[in-house]
Image (cartoon, rainbow, N blue to C red; front, side):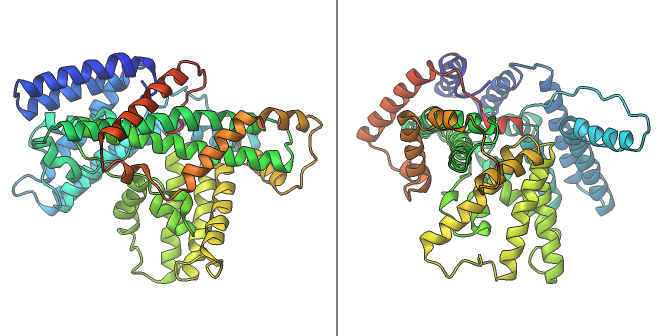
Length: 472
């Protein structure tokens, strides 16, 4: 189930909110409210593939039991470490099998066939939606209990609610347990908080429907074309750069908004990433919950910055390699992670500064986003070869297809140019939705609700409505 679907908007969400606030009005305990949220979250998650509920329940049970054993009175360091290791292995095994089994088996069969050996038959494994998000979230809880930075959840119902919270279940942001632990136990509900959440949701919905979906069509046309010209290749790559940002940040805004409606404060996941003046800065602004997760649970345990420079570069390499692999079972994602690792390591050579930091700030931002666009081509392409082919088109090294003028006529319509201009304006504007939503007024609310109604009407006319990060 996706947020930008008529079923979610007009059936699931209204029924959930009416039921939830009826229970709030009756003054039921927060533990019962959590059970209500968990029940609806499991419906939300299992709507298309009900068996996926069992997988999430299994991961939840493993980490709940592990955390209780780790925090048990008198548990020896050896026992604590063993239980943590078992929990990590089981979580990563589930993630590895469902997400990477077909990828690695395909690679193994390719090697065997090149060697003239018999290949293995490969099972078809369905990728569970959002498994990368909720396994990382659940693992962070167990690690934090092991580190003694958070107490274990009081009961299984509370922890189940934390893992299954449907607003951020399938595409983040990745929420740490300590961020919402107090609100799981007791949270406030108010009209002001609900209105703020509604505003977040409505703006995120508008970003998704009015911008991401519109520019996404341009990107798809160009990336599916054969030998586009220089201008068309750049236009399509820029369209994808806007699509993935507005698509993912829209989901994060909607998740934050839904959380506020029921009393939860989720962390910010984006902070104007396309205004970054270096790749290092870009990663402090893009998908912040994943970046900080990798920093706290991988980069710092590897030694972080407090190591020799050669080890520091190795740490950055490992973190970005795994960041790329986390995004998907394809060599293009691995290459994308290593592409960013290369530039981050270069910037470490220059004391965390880009080598073009002598330029005016606006040109530093421009140079950074050119690098980012080339990276997004890797991320979007089906294969590394097709990514290289698009790069060649962008640099003018490809023979241009005779159909390129027809492609130009298709993607440079006034309608497309208008939405690309809107995307450019909001992507690079200093005005951010997160800050804008902190203050509410009747006039702002009226404007946001009008935008939401208009977005709903536009949604009914669209057949193109993917959420890109659902595949991760």
